[in-house]
Amino acid sequence: MNTLSYRTESAKPQNVERKWWVIDAENQTLGRMCSEIAKVLQGKHKASYTPHVDTGDHVIVINAEKIVLTGNKMNDKVYIRHTGYPGGQRKMKVREALDKKPEFVVENAVRHMLPRTRLGRQMYKKLHVVAGSNHKYTAQNPEILKFK
Image (cartoon, rainbow, N blue to C red; front, side, top):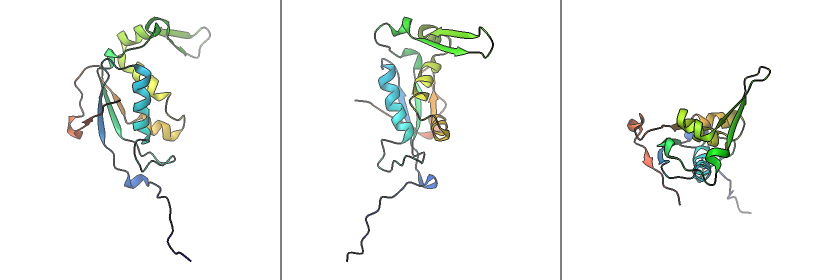
């Protein structure tokens, strides 16, 4: 009988090597870009991807205020939250959000594409969104990530 065993190696949290990526959001479509970012944060772009281990990389998004939305979403899409008090529903359109805090639009889209678990929250912490083109992560030597 053959004694060779073919086993799939599971990634161990202590053995995961993390890279840093920079994504320029200028003229990028929000949903398409954020789905790619979510894949990188989860580690699905790696051969060592393991569903129960955070194998993802860090992602830095620059020029978040120059994001593009298709159709009439800039005026029609609404972010709704509730303060917890009666009559406390608050609404904000995407145009207002981009004016006040452009990082929120990208962060919100990516956060809702990640798993809603402890592991998903751990993955989300590796996302760094900046409104301008300058970021404070140059010491990590991030590489530029291009999409198709």
